[in-house]
Length: 636
Ligand code: ADP
Image (cartoon, rainbow, N blue to C red; front, side):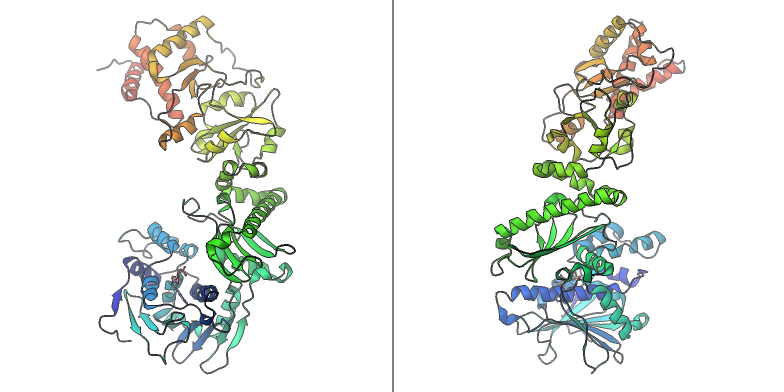
């Protein structure tokens, strides 16, 4: 194909990188190219269906996707009578990377100037490309050259885009007799290794496997000049009765809808008839999408009205269910108004509420019926569901029933609040929790020692969102939530299960009181108070929030985000039974004042480090001095 002068354009840098990657790809499942092109063709038809609501003359009598094989020319063509592309569309959509997923893939796996595919590590990562979807460019996995002939609906002009996938593409005007009446024809000139895609049987199998999510009929022309044969009727899957749908169809539909290559964890499909009429097909993914915590990511529901796609970003579910992928098809919403107005209608509000309730119900059913499966769902999406605990007080109780935790006595992530209440200790009046950064730090926290000694279970809460819901939730089943790091621990009345070690004795109370006062004097403005602790059994000291202050982790998070002036001063709690404390209490008034102060500061710093905070600036000097003392040397 000669390139007309002045029409050859370079791909955007990212596209060139991606194309190079495709050519060197060891990606095994090359069939995806057809799935991607079929899905583009179906999208194009759905978009024209929508535009034709305003201007019916734009639409054809019926939408069809046609695949034609030509053994002589060694080409495969995919033709749709959908919306088509203008010259600008061809440049923008086929010359730059429009897909956020593809961009994310490149950013993650192809370092600047890097060459994927040439080392084992990159090759492993290449298999992940499927998860991100490579769209149109996957055509270059099987073709040496791709020609796209397209006419934008309603336009008198048509264009021809062409590229060999090596860095440039060209666009030329198309003569009317060569141009499609409507829509787009993508012609793949198959490369040597891809001749298998000229076999009708092979193509038919791929279409059958991948067409359940496509709402446009697909036909196949097996050889140039032969009659087209319908392979798929294009009936929307969600309109069919459940009994007529196979597991494979659901899975395929889910993968196309979610752009994922795994298997869904839960399928929810129902039809509502009566006062309102709608169908819903929803999926909980089997793994975390890579952009789950992207703040711009919202619910991605496809909203249809009487089988016409209105938008693929309808806000049907609340943000805390944003991982659920779904299609809603209503018979009652008004078709002749804008996308926005449709979503403001009371009918839509009623659907939203009903769908949210149903999804929650089905999750609860899964939690009851298949604990293992539900735990996996919770591991993947619990951190998102917990956002609902403070964003949606109305559904808090339903969410508390679903919530699963790792706890000090059950470190695996599967403990429910009802389980917790079933094992309360005598006199225990609260549900205790500990906030932190990650589970391993949490379970090593000194603050848990006194609770462990009494057999009291503590919820370990490692997600940032935890700090917020515990602060707003009043309690569960009449028991308040209480931080183990806040205020004086009220666990004295709960009997200790482990007997203190033999021979361990506390120094006289008077000596201890003097020691605490001295410590307070040494630490000065850094602490609010120094006092004895019920929380500790093996560590010498820990930090807690004062009785009035908020939880220390919540406070740190608020301070870090600028929503609080400065974190308040902590209380240093001391373990009076610890040998180090006993020894210190007997050394009050020793001549080596420096050593005494160093030890007090190091105790404070140790408690800070255990909380994930930084020690004081004097830490290194003091530690070195004490270590020198320990090996019998004095400071140089
Ligand atoms: P995606 O489909 O995820 O957006 P692609 O790389 O597959 O990514 O396609 C890029 C864009 O090119 C599409 O969003 C669409 O605007 C346009 N496009 C591709 N194929 C067609 C087609 N058959 N008809 C109309 N537009 C198309």
